[in-house]
Length: 438
Ligand code: GDP
Ligand code: MG
Image 1 (cartoon, rainbow, N blue to C red):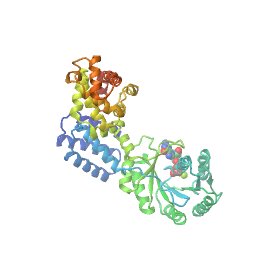
Image 2: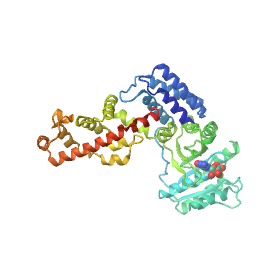
Image 3: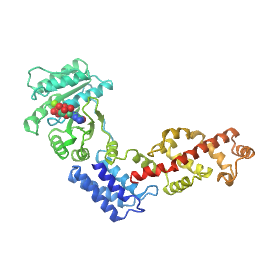
Image 4: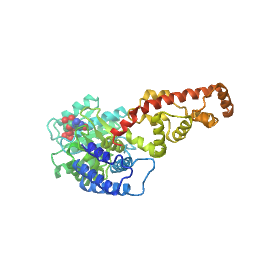
């Protein structure tokens, strides 16, 4: 799969102190092949590889990331950009009803998606009315009535009428009269784009002026989906795309090219046959899915913001020898301040036990006190060379303007932290990192 191919490519960069131009070129060639094999549009691939190479080869060298992490980070960011960056919400008409027209080829998933979208909006407190305008396919009206019925959505249909434009118009009147604030039109599709189909869709658009024209495309059809999207878009001025069947064994190419080719946002994705399987489309989530690295990416993000790799390496060495001192604790706290709660940071590392983290929790409000306590220790005390006797504790409490109770609480916390450190240095963290190819 695309994910596996990309991960293999990144694995080869692992362990390199520095990525040479040759390594990068080889990696980019593999990325390019993987994308083409995943049926991503050729021109899109070309631009993508150029952008990534420029950035990776440029001056963006970050101390805090390994070379492989840097390349992953850039590829991830460019993938997100390719799919439109931010998630785009459904347009809602300032004066109801919001009119949504579904368009697309036969079998793309229009009827199913019309119902799913109605269900989604109903959950958000809207009162959708579905409208059956596929007057050609036998049983198409019945299909909409069945799926609409399963979601307890009203369906406007006219028995035996073959004038789709008229049905849309009268359906809209019905919606206004019954205060339905969303009106979803299911239309006919053909096996291929033809003039008659386009004319009918254009006529419906002219008559009801949809708030949204959503093109439904089957992600499984790869490059074809992109061609279809391109043609529909130039004929109809679509406002967004719904990618269906992303749950299947798709090669991911459609998701990557549709936006780049049409310049129209992917707004929803169909994730299964069940009527609840429709989700808002998030470019960043899709990119993580393609890279197959999930939370690893958010960890990289956080790390590049705050963590100094050299310091992290030093700390890791300390962890290995299990000599974790108060000075290390202080260092950790400094870094944690810029990274957010330690649970959040450590929780993202694959294999770290969330329960263990709870016990090691650090109340950020108390950090200032902890800092004061540790800085009131002598160097020997901080490095664990001198044991903290009761009289020493008293001196530290006084010096830091805290109390013995607080000093003892810190010691307890420190012990818990040491325990966690032991757990981590059991090799768990390292193994997991290596398996991810970092
Ligand atoms: P239409 O001809 O465009 O109206 O397509 P339909 O709504 O009738 O869908 C065609 C087939 O695709 C049906 O069997 C649907 O159940 C199926 N389908 C639609 N969306 C999805 C999806 O997101 N995932 C899966 N697995 N199947 C889907
Ligand atoms: Mg249909």
